[in-house]
Image 1: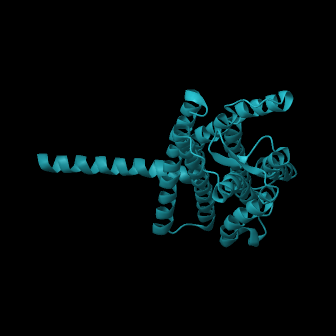
Image 2: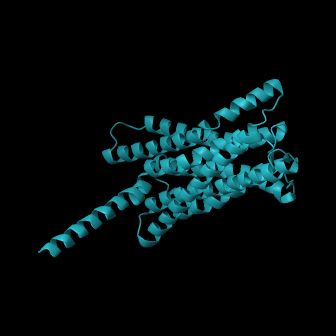
Length: 310
């Protein structure tokens, strides 16, 4: 095994968690599609559910790419086969694109809340298809912004990991990928949150209770977005420490890449479940409706039992 038993176990753990996240995201997407198809929803509900489905869709794409890399690594550890190819290079780039697109999905969700609070009088920002169109645009934008790492040939084959990625030794490509995939989305989220908080503080005190409650809900939604993104970043702290050690000492830890993917794949299933409980619309669809069905079923059984006894 290229990285020993520890590396193999870390990759296996990442594979299990990633698979779990993929299953959850597929189930939630299916529930959202079913619910939208069988119910007449208000525009705000439709937009919220579409943006939530967008996040789960991007989680699934990201996880599928990571899981396929895990499988390739495990097979490489066992059989030690070289799988370097042009497809390997493209997939290595697309993993970073998928990560960027996932974070941009949260940005679009935050932008919707910004429009509801700050630009509530602009009907164009409430247009349902605006956010539907934004979904493929986020993917195209991420891919275009990350094209330089392909042009610079900074996506290389890692012989000990058996997949392609921007190596930490490729400083230019690595910093560019880090800036585009993480820096830009976090900057946009911070600017949106700052704009909303400044706007709310500048509002007169004689606002109607309904407006205040709506703004409070939207601000809470932005804060939940930060919590979700923060969860993704928190699990990257161990690899950040290893990277700092590498830049200081010039020595790369042999398990750096294994730990690098372990963080996202452990956090994504947690994020997938957390979003259900932190998004009122999803919670209402998945949790409360299930409880209502159980209650209805229990009531039906009790009525049948009473009728039988009579």
